[in-house]
Image (cartoon, rainbow, N blue to C red; front, side):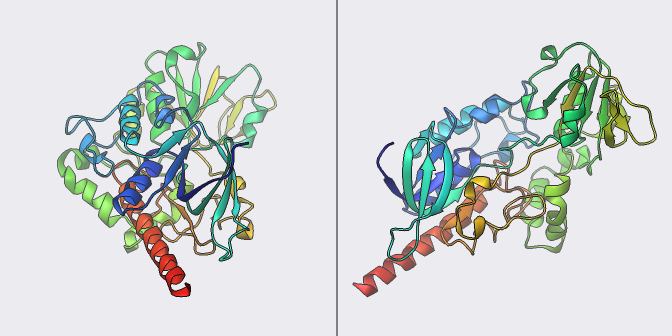
Length: 372
């Protein structure tokens, strides 16, 4: 094991949230170190399905300080995003190939502050820790998936790449969010596809086409925890997911996707079963059922880790965990607003957390000076 390595702030994760946090800290004259488990920043984007594009125009996809290098009005591909993040990270203190497996309060400090991080590269210590592992770190598949027939291929949407890699035959896509609809539409070009799940609200295409920047201003500045409308949406956001943008149920129907009610269970033959209808025989099930957080590795912290909501997402005050001084999050779903986990929105939350760290550092320095 390597010797103990100390930093003022350690950021866990070098996706858009971690990179934006590092940029914000550097802009305030504060040092940090970013630890990333993958081989390169943006690697998770390269593993997404081949045809994936962002639903946000390129002009609203920039991290602080560096414009996204794509034409205004275009919708970046997943590889363009990965390239952008890798280039952005080159200016920042990012170390790849290091997994953080646990965090605990540092016991050897006289002031009782600071953290010890257990990692694949040894032990690190820091006065502040920013968790920026993102909103898509742990794929969720319902328990009933284990009852499907062994003859049925099943995969989570995060594992889907393209139609050619699936076996011949009909496909059931479970989950009618944006990812589920886009995958179902792509698969329906050459096979029978069924779609099951509650369909979220669809932002009309005309709004995107004609409102332009006004639409971004609305979702970025109005749909926040500061406004009554934003708080109403935030209350159900992690449970129900975001609205459909750039794709609709009508698009799926035009593509030939056949709609089903919510999946009720698995019958005795290992086939998907639905309320008020027969069971369905398909060759493949794609679980477009979203993601769940995993805070188990934070269990050694005070109180067993940060408080969580009913879905397991950390509960913060705009990224700060008051019960655990020095611990922060960036990139959570609706951390402050609808755009908190988006490329163009995460910088605002990163700047706020950086301000909190800067103020905490200033107060600590002042207290040390007064005591000396």
